[in-house]
Length: 337
Image (cartoon, rainbow, N blue to C red; front, side, top):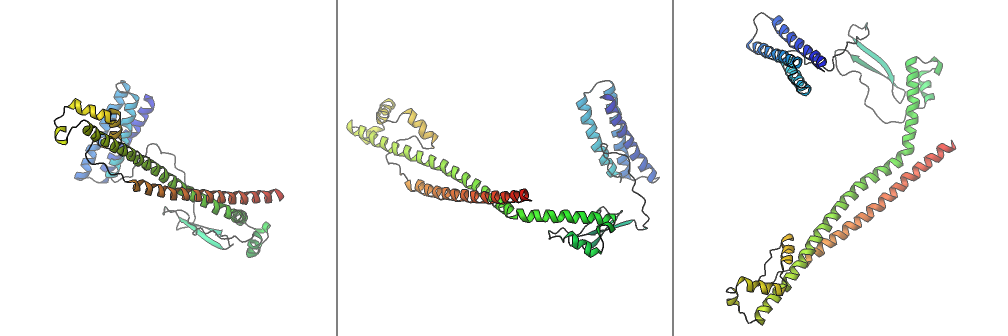
């Protein structure tokens, strides 16, 4: 472990020394900015040496050492950029692979290729550009038969150059792929439609579940409010039966009021149900208004969503059958061939 980390740290120390040498070699009088970079390099070099010493003396763990190495690499890359040098990556250093000699004075390499219509085009690369080889924009067009390709060149297969033979086989494969695409086009279109409808179906199902949840909450509130109204009526009837008038109610003891509430059905359990539903657990003089039209409207909307779900499912089944029909037909043709 320590040998590997020491090796990496040695490489980092060499990198810092190289940056400093490059700054020293540029000119005799260095700028203030370059002096700052030199100072930062010296500081970084000292840190690297200290880490190497800590590793040897086993003062830090492997994990801490690796974290420092990562941090040092980032710092050195920043210093490289500040010194006007390219950033380095210690993990991707490899041996140079020289390019074969090129006799072209402009260092341009060009090659002849043939498109799907058998027409030649030239592709070139300049060593100085990073774009590499560039071919014409790809277009899905019906390739010409390979026999027509030979007629265009005015040659037989045996007379073709190596490059032309490669283009011949490429064109042959392009023909086969194009025919395959044409055969599978109806299945592909039907499958795309299936995927679109499945996404729509997912949206409708989410909408349906949300409506179910809202309807359940609203209906529960309606039931609780309706029961609360019944309790309120019974509560007032108990006062009348016991000849307790309105102005005397406020003077009743808490225990006396609780007795009336219990007889009316206003229990602790029912109060908890009201709280969970977001309803104030109070017996009021005025009865609560219950809006049944809201739930009815939500149920009508749910019916529309359910209808959409049914239609989408039918469309999915139809398109799946189309895909299966095309694939079965293709398989039977291949078997016959």
